[in-house]
Image (cartoon, rainbow, N blue to C red; front, top):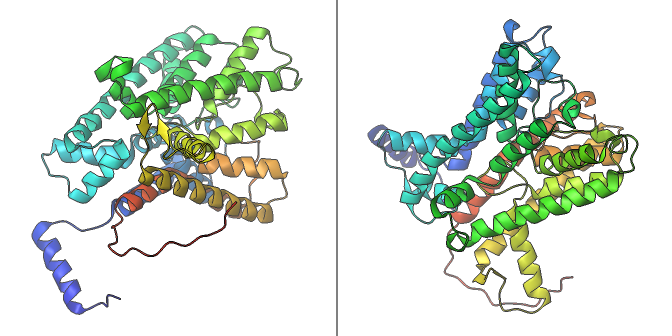
Length: 455
């Protein structure tokens, strides 16, 4: 065991004074950054000009954390409680939280001509799914460019469409908020009814889902497609994520439509075309975006369970979605297939999957599942709501989806604090876990194997 000695502190102080750098792990920096940003957001939302009637400190903190972690859950109605200034603060927090401190810090360091430490290079390469620092630089710059280009196009489309029936400034404000919220997979809306009123509007529904897909598929995938523009030349990861996204979207669309078509509280009153649009939005938004075209609390239990699975899976790595990620889910399925059919190793697209990747996926699955279990257990002690609503709330928070069965506004202070922690863990936890796994040291000692009964 390594004991503390005054010389260690003196050495650290001299090193910091000489180099100007503090050796702090990137996950700690990210956590501190998001926490500070959330506290700043809370302070701004508590100012008199941010609300029409004032909110509690806990409600302001809840809204700020939800925006920073691009979740979308709120205990108050954004459209009626917050003023245009307060709404601008929220969407600003969404934008900063969506881009992420990894991207912003890497881009800023490169722009200033500073060298990125080996520790930060390892994290950036792992997060960006790349093997060289030069590629990390390209993707860091590409993320900024892709984000603003897509958001500007989305904002322009929504503004022009809403301008037909509302004054231009109102349409512009609504377009900016909705466009940024959709692309960042935040699910926040300044409309009291979310986009239920636009359930039959193809421009709003298709525009929203396209932004959600682009934001949730992953920047490395978009960057690879922009560069290669040829299916065969794309990285195996890119092809797997695209195929997995298509499969999940098509399966979810068909199942949700099938299970809700006769539900008088959701799809039954709609025309066939509107049912298709509603089913498509609910499929896409469940992958951590948080918008809804029908009342979530009125969905059948079978649909609710399916949506929880989709929230749990989430989107692509290095995206604006959370969950365990599509890549993780596919790796786990490939590993299970390899074991069941007694293959020597799991493969995807004729490429072998490393043991480290499988272990990383298993660790992420186990940690996320345990967090959901214990959080659900705690919330059942705090709340008297139906179990399925509590479980849905927990999965939605930790996957930063933002959907709710009307439970969020009625949560007790203890449950609100629990949800705040879940949103934080959902946004930062997987990245911290990946870093800890990628930074672990290989031991030189090997122990004899033993048989251990499982299954």
